[in-house]
Length: 90
Image (cartoon, rainbow, N blue to C red; front, side):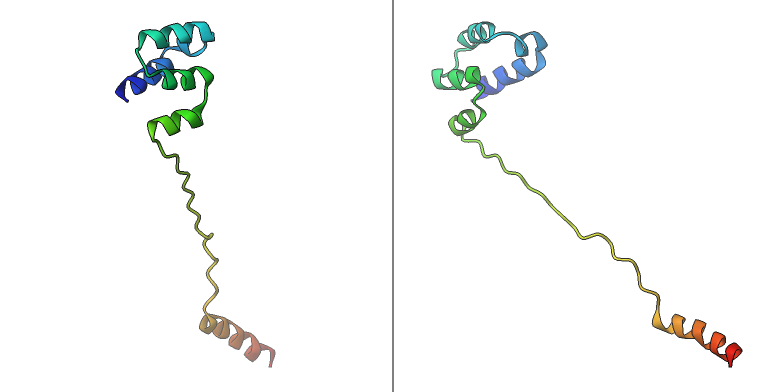
C-alpha cells in the first residue's frame, strides 16, 4: 500500500506528471511496480475503485449547532421601567 501512497504523493507534488497525458502517467505507473488493478484505477481516475481496492472509507461528517438566541429582557427589569412611566401618567 505504501507504493500507492508514494505514487499518489508524487503525482500530487509533480505538476508536470499531474497534468500530463495518460501515456506519461501509464509509463510512470509501470515504473512504480504497482498492482495492475491499482494502476488501472489510477489511470482511469476511478477514485471509488481505488478506495475499494485500498479498503479506504470515506466518511463525511457535518456538525450543526443552532444559532444563539437573543437574550430576553428580564421581566423584573421591564416592570421597573413600566412603573415609573405609569406613576408619571397617573
